[in-house]
Image (tube, rainbow, N blue to C red; front, side):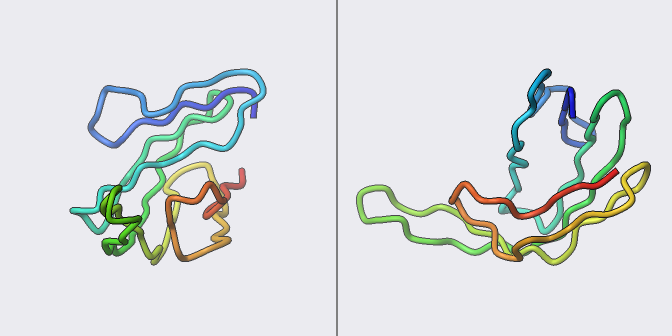
Length: 103
């Protein structure tokens, strides 16, 4: 896409806002909740993406402590996106693709 904007449902701060040569975007998941809803705008087309997941703590190291990993249950659009592909059900801190949105 030429441009991408991402905000959380009911939030005003943008999580991601980039134009020209958009690279993959990271969607932050809330470990205290089992779901997140994002408003995503790609090339001036707005959609809502719902993500359902479960979270569990993962020890990085004694020095660094814990982070949360997530197990992706489902991701679905409610609007213009017609397909969401899950490449992995396990979401970690590694820089890897987990979902891909098709329009």
